[in-house]
Length: 213
Ligand code: AMP
Image (cartoon, rainbow, N blue to C red; front, side, top):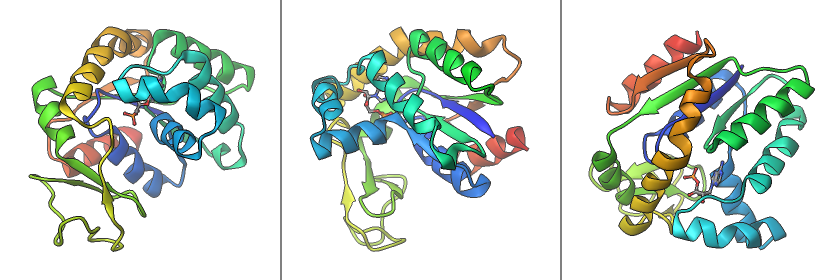
């Protein structure tokens, strides 16, 4: 199964990608997670990506296309993968088409998790994630039993540096300018579907599974 999960920041791509990855036994390839890991490790890619990520802008296409080209060649992607946060520009989508065609592969599903911009600002600014297991929480909608501690594994909850209101608004503007056109790239391909990201998380997940079969 090769799936692209699209949607604006905060629509729930990461959460849903993680659940689908667990259920279907394929890896979740999040360029955001990979870039954050590179920044933390201080690699050359991390150093090149840091400033754009802090401002809520996009990292250059050559960096993210390179990361994905390497990653999809790894053994665990043999059964498929879920792309989460990539492609984010039409140029990235074109590069993805080319790298898949070279390997005789194709994308089976492109699913857009659609959501309302204003709701996303409050969703994102309230969220936190377990540093250990990746479980997501929210200050209003999904509070942990003990503040700052993961219900599932007891790990510490962390907040992303770019989840502040100013950066979130920039990320949303960047999404509308540069990522929304990617939908048109896939819309007529026969594999494109939309789900309503404003529905409860479990409902969104059920709808995704219904599409994926
Ligand atoms: P995310 O975790 O998907 O919200 O990504 C966090 C940040 O990483 C974004 O705001 C961008 O700065 C950068 N990023 C992640 N994926 C991409 C991509 N496909 N193209 C360009 N920049 C990206």
